[in-house]
Amino acid sequence: MKLLDKLIIKDFLKTYFFVVVLLILVVLVLDFTEKNDKYISNQVPAGEILRYMGNYGLYLNNLLTPITVFISVIFITSKMAGRTEIVAILSSGVSFLRLLVPFLVGAAMIGTISFYLNGWVLPTATENMTVFKLLYLEKGAPSSEQNIHIKVGENSYAYLNRFYKTGNTGYSFTLETIKDGELLAKISSDRIEWDTAKNAWTLRNWRLREIKDRVETYSVGESLDTVLSIVPDDFGVPNNHHETLKLPQLSRQIEILEDRGADNVSYYKIERYVRFMSPFAALILTFIGVIMSARKTRGGSGFQIAMGFLLAFLYILLFLLSRTFAETGSDHPILAVWMPNIVFALTGLILYKTVPR
Image (cartoon, rainbow, N blue to C red):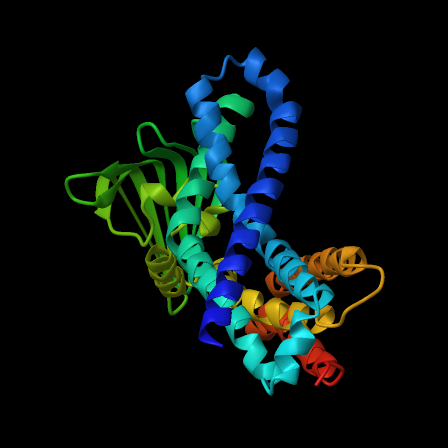
């Protein structure tokens, strides 16, 4: 079956890329039509629009992979079943599992490419999309943040009334150390500045209050250098910051946030779980797609393709729900993230009992 394997893989990949390009072009045209008025009113350069559409196309490719893989598999398999090719292959003594091999090889190739895109290419595209929206669609990024609360250690909490990113300067700074509900120390300053030469913060007009064994000490000063577990880059990060980090950067950021004891580390961990989980979707959906469309039907492949769209959308819906469930405080985030693959894998094993022998 080596020659047939090559033909199936070639046909599978060609159909996949055709479906990907077709769906992406349709969505990009709709997106351009929706945003065209803003492009004109904000005088967005044509080159920036094309760059944004390229980045958005990469994002869509990742989002639509379950649909495109499933539809491609069903289209190829139903076409083979309609020409009685599958019956001939099985009648020659080839098992159904052996027939699945070229499809799974093609899915593994797609999954490998998807893993690389998710880990190293898509984060840059997502970051560029975010910058484009801030500059051209949302009238620029804010130059400062207000009322910032951030955890900088296991028992340490910082507060800033306002932070200006242009000068890396914050105002009305407070750092409190609280353990078991008791205040151990509190340092305040009128201004906090980032010293690039020392890679440290400088407090201006600071006041330090310490409480030990119910004895309180108080000290003041004009200038004080201090090292915190935060840097200027920690301010002004977008809500989707975890999606803009490449896989090695994401792992390092998780370590930093864990050392700091930050509360939002779960978002970064879930993002990493998702990136390792997503490529397996291509294998599972390919397995189900071949099983569903291996039988020859009188109505042709239209119904099977429609079912493919439905199941693929159900997979995406289940994926979004499981990710939301994981982010809202699930005790087992890995299990929640992997739930779509587990459910569809079990579904595929049940459907496997119905395949033609």
